[in-house]
Structure formats: C-alpha cells, structure tokens
Image (cartoon, one colour):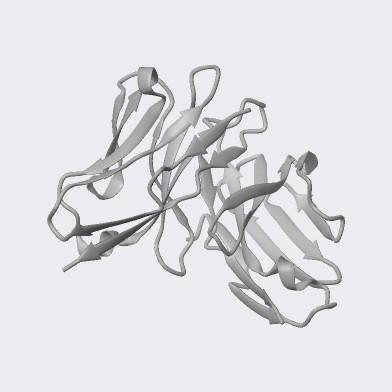
Length: 114
Length: 111
C-alpha cells in the first residue's frame, strides 16, 4: 500500500536560515508527489508537485523539492526562511487508483525564530 | 474569485444535531473530494465524486452522506453528530492533470 512518512513532526529554524523538510514515500511505480502548506487557521495551498522529468522542481514562495527515486524521498527546501513560512507542511503521494486521491504524510510543523 | 469555496467556515453544534457543509468549485473540474483533518492534523480522504457519481467511499460511518447535485457542487451532510466528528473538513477538486486544489476548510466543533 502507498504511504508517506514525514520523519520530523516539529522543526524550528531561525529566520534567514535554510530549511529542509523530509518526506519519504512508499509506492511501486513512478509516484506523483506534492507538497502542501497550511498556515494557521487556513486551508491547504499547493507549493509544488512532481510528476515526471526534471527531478528538481520549483514551487511558489521560493520553495523547491528534489525527487530521489533511489532514496524514495521528496524533500522540500528553502534557502532562506521568512517568519511568514511558519506553518504546517504536508507531503502527499497520489494513490495508485484512477480516483486521484492523495495519501498524506502526518505533517511537519515549522516554527521560525526571529 | 475563490476556486474551491466551502461554507460555513466555522460551525459549533451540539451532539445529536444534523448539519451540512457545502462546497462549490468554479474550476470546471469533474472530480471533487471531501477530506477530514483530525485533531492531530492527519488528513484522510472520505469521499470522492466524479461528475456526480460516487467513486470513493472510504470507511466512513453512514451518518456521513455526500451529495453532488452537479459536478460543481459536493455537499457533506452529517447526521447525529458525535464529539469525535469534531475536525476540519476540506473540500477539494481535481484537474485532469492530477493536481488537487483544496478549499479553505470548515472547522466543525461538536459540544
């Protein structure tokens, strides 16, 4: 069965520091992978996605993610974090059925120190 | 113009009541979903409709009944609300390229 693991439940970084959020997936074929962000009291916003092609994908708000098939990973990165990046981040994989449903990781809470 | 809109955003109700959450998308997508986010922020799919036809019905109590009057709308009706139903409910829709867009969420609190 497909699954997504986000090993870090909570991460704290200083403003201006670099950020990497980890995501590991379990999927038999080539996965469709997503990162979403949820700001406090808000909905889910798509940051970026990977379907195929270049394994380094760029997203909104200065985020990027790299797909590594050998490591079954899709880690999210940002070179310099802003205080407004404090939020919950979710990695997701599209399930194998044609329904398109997403299977989410448990999320990583990002706290940004001034 | 909100692409996927849900109403109400906040709902506080007593146990045993029946309530509905409405969802509309103006993206022209054929497929819509309801996801539930529990108190630990875990997101799990509940239902999916494709062009008014139910295609996913995960293990959800039958007190929850989705209804899709047309492909732009997917409403969620909940009967006999229980404390454990307190959660954030997200509506979403999917474009043919498999990207899913979520609404702002509906915060349901059962007291």
